[in-house]
Length: 360
Image (tube, rainbow, N blue to C red; front, side, top):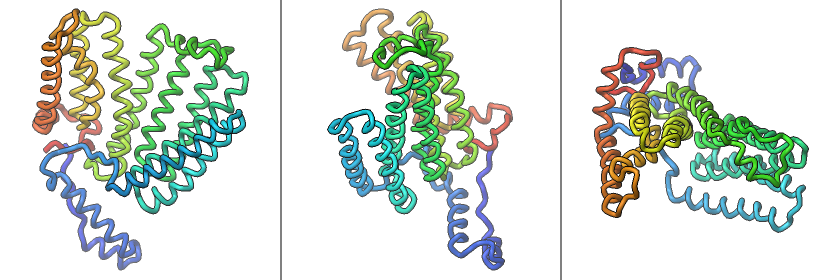
């Protein structure tokens, strides 16, 4: 069980400054970080999962301006037209977004504008790559895979340079697209005129399920890599893990519970319940409400089947379904802390347990 960290000894910090190891500014930042980590759980009235889109209306204002500006640049695609423009303009938009991020992300630390710029950058790289590769004879499968992979690699460079947690969500989204493309059975000689045929290449469903499972496991491993670096969730590692957990949970729930439900509908209600119970247990252990939220559709489906059976629900039954669904999440959210405390105490020691958020 993880213990609450002690504050850093002020004498050690002062000694480091005198020895020239730290500057005065670095010492102040280090002391603030130590105090934050030591008091984080004690100062909060409730345990929570940190999440922040923006810090103030100024960020919304700037984000609107950036969206309009970048939208205007993208509009040139339709006005000018042509394959060369479809390759050049998105690439230019990506370059402009990178340049702007030097100010909005690195200098001014504005979260929402940084998210807009990261989206424009990765989207520009993807459109440019997709258009360029689409002129070759690679076929839809190769084009879809390579363009998504290039966009994911470019987004990884963005994350390394600007350390923006949200960029990991974008990277993961492109990685998911690449994984799906890799697991298709589409004829390599297919053309862009046969999009419907490419979509049907996911049949049988096992292809889509396996792709979701592979990606979900990889995304979950990545999320835990960042989570275990920041068990008290006071830094960017935790925020990065949050976005990866959203992707991982959605992919895993759809791969497992979705496949069970699609095969036999309500007759497989018990296996679906067991799967969702396992996901709830994992969510409690890693202290991620967002991980469990991904299963809300299947939880709703279970309640629907329990109330309406195989028939169509009436208005009264829909009201009951919504009440039960809301009650489930309200109760779980309200008693999350004591539930997690009991679960963590009941579980034996396992690798990494001490690096998970403390349950007290």
